[in-house]
Image 1 (cartoon, rainbow, N blue to C red):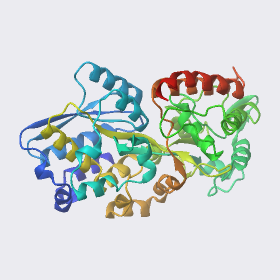
Image 2 (cartoon, one colour):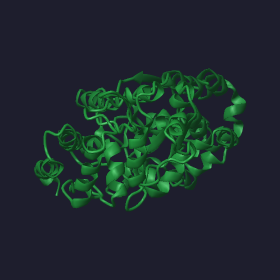
Image 3 (tube, helix red, strand yellow):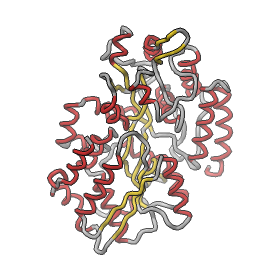
Image 4 (cartoon, rainbow, N blue to C red):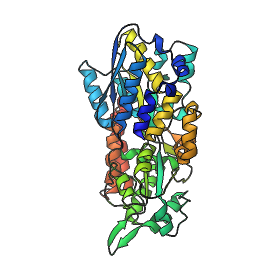
Length: 433
């Protein structure tokens, strides 16, 4: 699939003269410009081939501009390397970084606001063209600092063969928390005392807060305020959500009782060690290519309401650039997020195309007709909320993650772990109030 995508990128009929006219490539640069593009490799699949293809195609189509991708590891590695580079006076020109790190980049005075970069009605229309849910984590002080690109929501994947074997309708996923417990218990298989297949896995390593935020949103509890200087970790709805997650293993025996690794959960799914999993829609292409059984994809089950956090990375432009470099960087970001490119990226990776216009392209409409589950994460945006993001985001999310893991490993009761996290986060954020 990726080879055909890359070939398509080099076919000017895919990009189209209309697309070139729309984004005004000819005005991007009057002198040779070289742009360094930090990109995180964080999920399964050889996405570097696709990103290399994009950079090569854009550079070929835009005389005088060369875009060079630099692959920077995980999202955490990428923001760490970026901040180190900023402090060392050698930042990237453009980067894909987690949308939740907008406050961090803003506080470091590292990035430019797109509101100051755009100058025409056409550019304003482009800025207004993205799904509102994806824009929430890119705004600070009412201005846009990050443009949605590699965006996602968590979704539920299930093994249809395992459902049928357990006497469940293979075409009907759990729709509520209660059904999720009921299904997971039926899907759990044992050989003596040894569990050979768990009913469900919700990863709790890496960034456990993100998937857990699906539960808090479904329980009508919201973790932070819009200004990023207050959190509500110890409210009743959050405690109840964490108790539910703990009970999946402790009470119901339907989920592993240890920390569940983010990176290996899809492999566990492929190899029959779990019948259901929560993970990013960014794994959709990976699952389609590697699952040896028919699978389904659904919105996360509801409790008081449906809900999921948005996730993934935004495109940021850094503030050390000359005017010509700024113009070229903006043009590249506009091209990368144009409807045709957003459609192509969604097909290649499984990430959600970030604008309604992308879903109206012929390529994405044809893809969806052949693979309807690709629309699940898009449709879930109606119920989505901003991902946990604050000032001092790395510190605050680590505090929260540590509390979640303490409860999930039974080291602390959920209420105690969250109360301690609240107090510690309050101390960190007090300077920003």
